[in-house]
Length: 247
View (cartoon, rainbow, N blue to C red):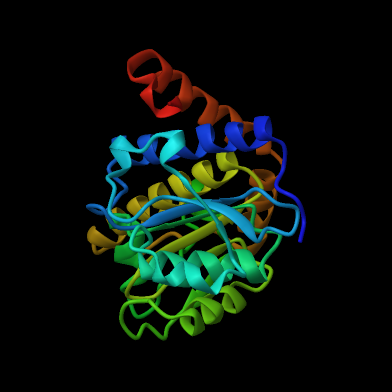
């Protein structure tokens, strides 16, 4: 097994992940004390950080995050780990080494779209076009995702995509960095908000052509620095108002 990365690197990852929880709570994207984020600390992705069971996002600190091993079958017996978190994130990090960061949420607008018979994020403007042909879809919701078999199914369903629209459930985003994951989830929720509002007018949608939507999605993929800057700015706000997430 790969060794855990240096203490300094792990601490930075802890700090960024803790900031991600705090920012998510401030934006109202969390759901009570449910939902989970994780981040890989080993090269193979199997050693990863995860938030403890039923701790509110607004109170999570860097030191609260649990360091787990996806190959450790005894983890499922721990009282400080939500079975659904282990089922989903354990399998994501066991099967998808490219998924350095994974965010699973039930944000209101994205979950609204996920609850439609056709959960596609139609490209009707710049934010929605970011997801053109770039979201995997799960249409087989069967209740709480609390088994490793279900987590494995979701991981394999993502394939080479970085987003999963979880039908009748919520959304999953994986990324290379915490900043990229945050901005992707933020923009997906915003895109779904715009789409829900457009649907609510009852008027026909003015859907972009495939060519324009594809070019726009590629343009988004070329500005990773935008995503990183967005997250750093949100961290700066936290540092000014409540830097306790760093503890």
